[in-house]
Image (cartoon, rainbow, N blue to C red; front, side, top):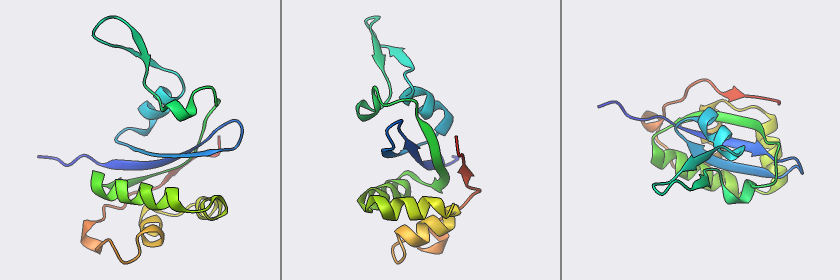
Length: 125
């Protein structure tokens, strides 16, 4: 069975705040954060994006990287969220490859064979 690849992504809100998350599909998740709704079983429309981002658009994708399995993506997200804003800005400004990102966030934690580094997908929009 094929393993699902998880991505870590960072969004910037219109007021400059950074939002970090993980997903299996960055484009879909960005659309959901941007206001796309879903219908629940009773026909009611409910927003799919994070509550913290409601009313904070437009959102821009600052960084995304293919991380590997869900556990590794969750650990990377946790460590990135714990950085001070200036540290996050410096890290993201350097446009790290997925492997470099993991080395900086989880230096001693992730054995090389657990990583699935792929090309970084960055955007300045």
